[in-house]
Amino acid sequence: EDDENLRETLVDVLDSLDYIVEGAADAAEAVVRSEHRNFDIVISDVRMAGSMDGLGALALLKLRRPELKCIVMTGYADDEAPLRALNIQAH
Image (cartoon, rainbow, N blue to C red; front, side):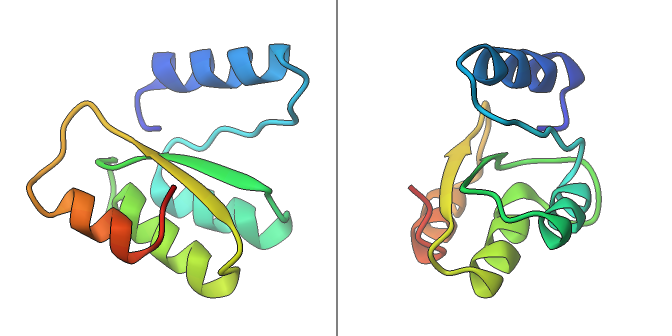
C-alpha cells in the first residue's frame, strides 16, 4: 500500500491480531522483501506509485511461489484490473 496512513493502519490492525506483518511502500519494495522472507499471504493495493503496480508485483511473487495467497484491494481500478487479478489467481 503506497498510502502511508492506510498502510500503517493495516499493519497495526493485523499486528494487534497477533499476525507477523511487514508493510511496503511500493511494489518493488514488496518484491525485494519477499526475496528475504517467505510470507504466507500478501495483501496488495492495485494501483501503487512507482514503475510496477500491485498486480505486477503479485504476478512476480506468484511466479516464484505459485501457492502464495494474495488478496487485492483498491480504491480505484481500471477495467482490466479484475481480469488481471483473476489471471494471477489472486484471492
